[in-house]
Length: 266
Image 1 (cartoon, rainbow, N blue to C red):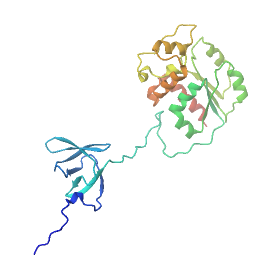
Image 2 (image 1 turned 45 degrees about the horizontal axis):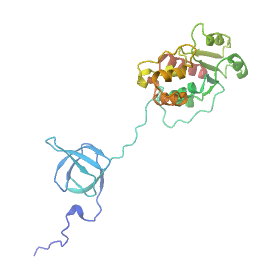
Image 3 (image 1 turned 120 degrees about the horizontal axis):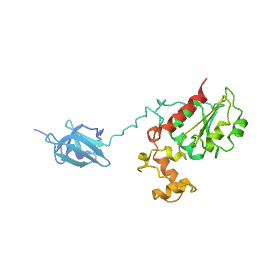
Image 4 (image 1 turned 135 degrees about the vertical axis):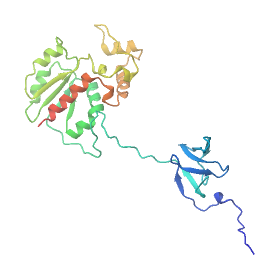
């Protein structure tokens, strides 16, 4: 005489533990309630989308014991994708995962202001830590010759200086010409302010506006672009749009790379 299990509860509803299976793309499963069989094409918070062999899509909740995999009851769970390690730094250099910061060199890189320093850190920060190069800002370069003399550059303590608006005939060019030590390299970009070194396309604007002489340049930029006249907030917005060297103009990129090479040269 054939015996029957008195428990008539369907197998997928019984309390026995069932395995949890990541709903990876292309995994073929059957939804127990409807019998719909298909491959996973998408898994989002709380749902999974299946595609059957006819191309039809159905969305199902990720419920316990909700699917059959090769005839066995399983619970589909959202895949936990491990974040991929970047292979390049923001400057485009080869990334070195797990590298520890080098003890700071005696040499330094000076930039004019805080915004310059924050931009350099955003793009070259990883490289600078590996090389042990510290970047400091000066709040202007009017006293640059005295600052250089106080630093005391030497072959084993080189100094690199990045100057804004370093173009022929400018005040900045005359100041830079007074620095003659072979252990100091003064370079610059042509922009009135480092803001302009960020590509307009990265900010979603057609171009940096022209600000009339006699008007504060940063305030004039905010006004021309319809931004609130808060230069601190404007800069944070600009900086937030910089994710790599691709967001910067070549005229700045080349000068910063030149300074790093100079300071770290044997």
